[in-house]
Amino acid sequence: MYRDGFVVDDGPYRRLNDPANAEFLRSLASGKTPRELSDGNVPGDIAVSLVDKRGEEYVETFRSFSGAGSSLGSATVTDGESSPASNTGRITPADYAAPSESRKGSDGKVAGIQVRLLSGRRIVARLPIDSPVHALVDEIQSSGAAGEDPYVLMSGFPPALITDLNQTIKEAGLSGATVTQKKQ
Image (cartoon, rainbow, N blue to C red; front, side):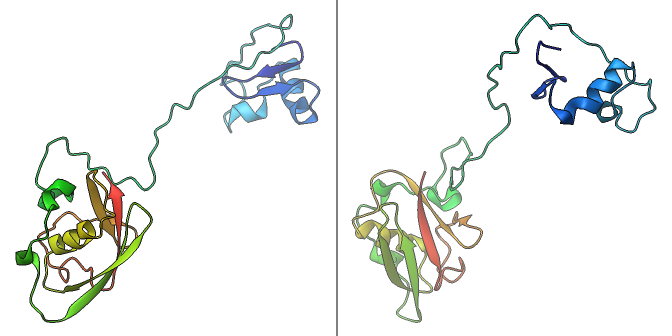
């Protein structure tokens, strides 16, 4: 209890002259447990103690956020071990310096895949559906806008990390899809 108000536990400062606090203060003055503290319990089950700070002004103290948080749009692989891109989806541009013709599939049915790059640029890759996802990475790298930092690819809704780069375009469900490049 302060000069002009009070605080219940670690709650907000409440002013004495606020009509919303009148019932709470009347209950305390008459020696009863305030209804908001009783929580449906039988009155008398709760001990209420007051700390007399009526000679002091209330000073608000800073309390930092102590909860957990998540970063939206993050595609960080939390596996601490370094493993091949085919297992984690992590792509290191230096590994794709020159496109490999052996990664291209047959000349059969072709899939169009829209790719949103980190730079904001969009490209459309046209690849045989039996090509591995590595061929899509080759297309991204040959665009010149892939950047030099490691990245991952995400697709679908909600966006899912593409981890197996050895899968075919068809197996990965990328035919006609939008793929997003995310910084690793």
